[in-house]
Length: 143
Image 1: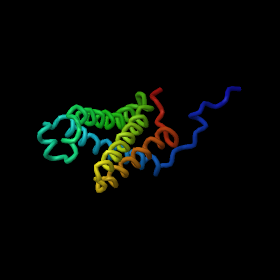
Image 2: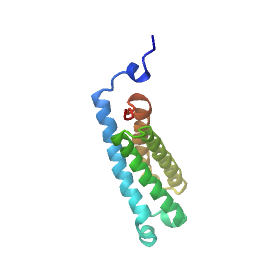
Image 3: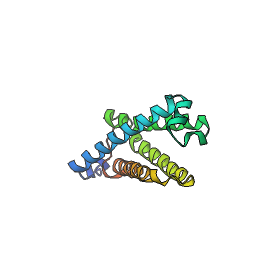
Image 4: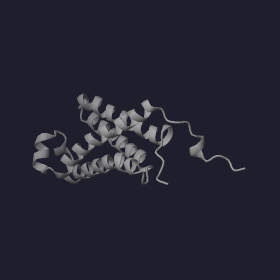
């Protein structure tokens, strides 16, 4: 007799956890899509006026961060919605969490501690999604 496949042994996901994960994914995707769009498409001159830290880093780094945030936003939702390569969703969440860790370290180095609660909150949401989609409630791929 063959053992049950892992999916058959997995406990059903609670409705509350599922709603929490999807809500966190949508919220993170929206925030990072907005932030990424601004950093990757807004003129550098306007970015320097609007975002205090941007004159301190190379323009290419600002664009790279914006593109990474956009990719992360897409990665939080598209693989999960389509169930095509859904393991990319927790990978995207992990990547966005890493971006928030680097952002927090950067802001600490500049003495900008007022933004740390925001960075920490986004990191916590990203970590929740990564844990949820890697461990607690992975999305099964299409059959």
